[in-house]
Length: 351
Image 1 (cartoon, rainbow, N blue to C red):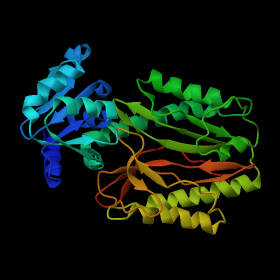
Image 2: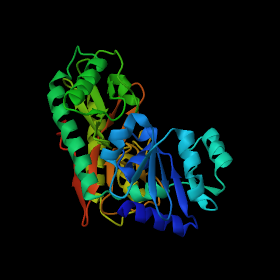
Image 3: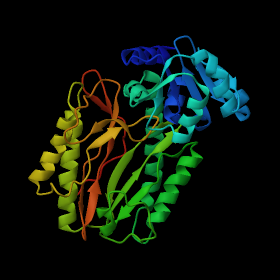
């Protein structure tokens, strides 16, 4: 019940008494329910109730964390059944997720004061427990293993799609799913930061950017490697080595108490020194957990502060239209006195 008690304290600080949780990641985080798209959670001062339908009668009971009451009911039945327990309360709702129609249904049946909130549960999710870190670590270890199996297939004459499918199949065979659409961008397509795999055939001399992650038991990993096929042109090598320098420096700088914006600047300044300031077109990284992209936000000007238990990506990149691109990304745990790199796939060395 520690998570629920932390949430109640956060609600009290905002002058609220209850929260209707509709964001699937937050439902799972607070309740343990492994089908959170089909669940809602009501947290009040005296109870934490998970509502789901009859398809999950057994599953919900098996999944529910200690202290979570499970009620099997259709959505409207659940809302009507809860009405007496919440009457007169100041109720938080997740404004970034709850639809207008769903809010209207609540207003019709509950005599409460509704208050949209943002980031309430997400703030709790920033700091991963030991069990959560273990889950992310396992997802990344699986991704490293699959990448090692597929790496020899990244060669001239193979389509980007073939690499993406091999990675996805490897994840499936290992009991996981892909955390997001696999990015495989080769040659000039490497200049596309989110270049999902196409039918382009990899050529000798290409750099190939591969960005993928595993979703294992609800927790995600995220890693990018840019690999060389044959001998890339000198300008591509220069691009690669500049990004590698920036990535390694940013990883070494990770420590609790550091502002995320300052960490972004470590990599950004190095790339600027190589004349690649404009080529670094996105932020340095983000948090990873039940959602692939969550807090903290590692970007220019971000006031988020790193703290032990956060799991973040460090992923500088440089993208030059007509030439290609490079991104190198590691998954990093912020520890009490520094960092631990969770991704162990080797990086290329291009001389």
